[in-house]
Image (tube, rainbow, N blue to C red):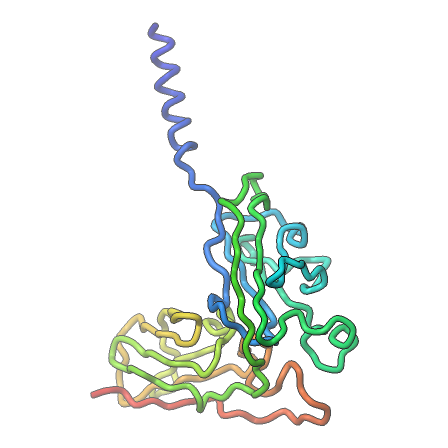
Length: 261
């Protein structure tokens, strides 16, 4: 009896935590908007746990409104684009289907056609690194709007609020969510970096920067690395799908903003 009681207590201590472990799931997919340009280049899929790699092609598909799967929509890499912790997959639509005049585009047409509806489907049978399965099938509905055919411009970003404690900026289009946090720098009057947190707004059309310490002085600077891309792969110097003879520009990469007294 004593042995049985001890066994039950030990098993209870072990089984309880195991039973309480959450089911693996897809945390988010960026861009989060359901309305996307026809030349959208990449998606980021965030998982709650490390996933098994080199199998994504078996568990991700792009379907049109009739459920027909485009088997050649995505780039087929020998090495997939995972974050070091295996919780984020970068998924690229085939650039050859985006660039006009390229063989893939001529033969197959674009993966996303203007005015059409699609579903990005992620199968719930995809195993995690530990062999568990996702919470269920994930479906991202997509409606396709006009492509991004112009170079991004910092002049088209508008500051909606700037106080000592935060900076809010509206963007002119949807930008790459990972690059936006890495390639935008805030500096003070002495051109010194201001440390803080970038928080993406709804549908990645805005961001809020919250400094670790309150802004000081009369103004701050928003500085852009020209490699920052919108979701169609256009950066501040060139288009992904540029016309023949297109010349790269020398963009304005700093925006000075006055602090509210």
